[in-house]
Amino acid sequence: MPSSIRNSLLWIFDAFERDPTFITKRMFGLDAAYIDGLLCLVAGDRDRPWNGLLVCTSQDRHAALMEEVPALQPHPVLGKWLYVAQDDPAFETAVDEVTALVLARDPRIGVEPKPRKPRGKKSKLPKA
Image (cartoon, rainbow, N blue to C red):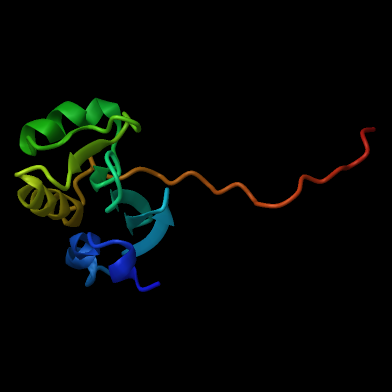
């Protein structure tokens, strides 16, 4: 399925296309943007609360980011991250502000991705 059908919010990541460190991956059935190896943003076009922009950060950085981008609020499921819903009147302004912060390498945005656990059956080694 083409990504434009899968997620109509991929335009958010257009600002990163010229950054050589930019990659996207799927996460929670949404699209995630990585810059410099850090997980920065997740965009989704699903039902609330997965229908907007999630900003990957830590809770100690919430207040400063919400002051700078007032549309951001703690995500109702992933409270460690901030969120702006797609139907928020300030959505596009918030997207522009957040993507500019990511491109400026603002240290408040971006988290180290956790290593993926290998999939498959667990090895049944005999106990010694």
